Length: 347
Length: 256
Image (cartoon, rainbow over the protein chains, first blue to last red):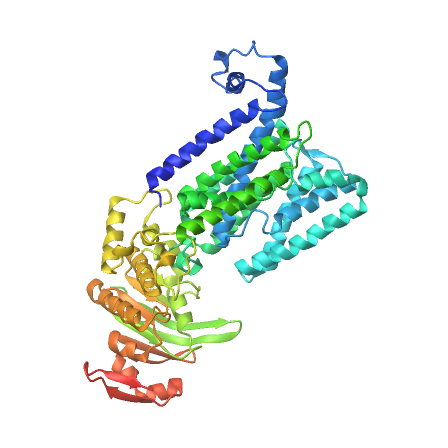
């Protein structure tokens, strides 16, 4: 087991890697933009120092590609990766179940249902720069979570098992409704499928402006409750006897993690695996103490999604792969490797 | 020393009465055992005393303070609870588990201080678990783990310690070890200890006071030798036993 100092060093390293991966990813694409120019163009957007940066010598097409296409997409990947991985570690901690992930309470199928409904009905409007599909997905996610929680609730509290089971039941119901809508609307199938497999290709800066505050606030809430989650590792009764209001903690964290997930899904579609494997990978690196686990997971989630999205947009350029496919193809074997290695160590 | 006063306590679950009109005073600084057959309300009693279940106002008083008025975060500074089993699947070390016992005394972002580490070391030495401090909690044997959990409870610096069948799942060697530890804590720390027990002989050997529950009522409460008798056991457990004298300790010994 690593000592606490090396865990802190890992977190700082991950932070540096996150910034670095953002810059490197900006340089990669059909049009390669030099590293130095990328850094300059990024710094030129920061208030305070922009007057000291001279960007006049950089090609105008590069400026356009970076500001309009790549930067929004990479910031989006970082934010969504942070939100999904953070929500994953929270769901696993608060439900005390290692298989829990951001979509476990039916959130993903709720979002898919809401988004698909908007696509097939052709309803089109915009609120706060969010398209009707995004808003449908967001509402679908939140309403489904609320529904699942209330189905599972007996008296004052919901037990973890009934919560997971009602999540699965509602999930199946909504997924088959999505399949039904696909079957009845063959001409929209590509649009729906691409969206239910996740993609950041359509993300715009004005969408980032909508999601970044709720996501960063949620992340702050996750970190705020790190110690409570550690106490909850000892069991619900022990946690209560150690002064934690388990019921209230569960409500706050389930709500916050669901909101973070819903905001992510609303702009990117459903990206699987991030919320499951990143927390587990980090648990193997820094251990189960949430004080280190939460920050490490959030930062790695951002890095993981930036790398995955860079692959998704470059590997078969000019076409793009669905992001959910890339995260699963990288994520699943890596996860199996980690499990295999940790079994080796334990034996 | 914190006494526990119970006044007209009733508790029902789904219209089924579990505890009926209980009133008694558990003296501070003593080791009290709760015995009784399955379904007599022992666990409910322990959960109500430790506020895992919430009861109505003015029924339970800890050191003359109404338990229903004490916030659980506040209560955790003066009362600790050891459950029957603690199932921790994540890779926490014994030391980390005991350190979590300091949580009630720490503010949200406050780092553990030198004093907290001192307390953790002291309670781990007291429970003879310092040797396992770097071992993972789920790799310890049942008896070792239960002593770590008791150390975690002690790290809360409680005045009152409540244990729910702490030895039920242990082998006889570890049962004696844990019971001896609890007895020793009661003597050296002057804590008020309430323990649910199944083994009547442990109640006789280790407890200062015994509460015998029957059908949700306190059937008898008092000195172990006055409570654990042939007549009471026949009445409460519907079991005809013999009471012999232990050849070495001269204590009464229940034989089935």
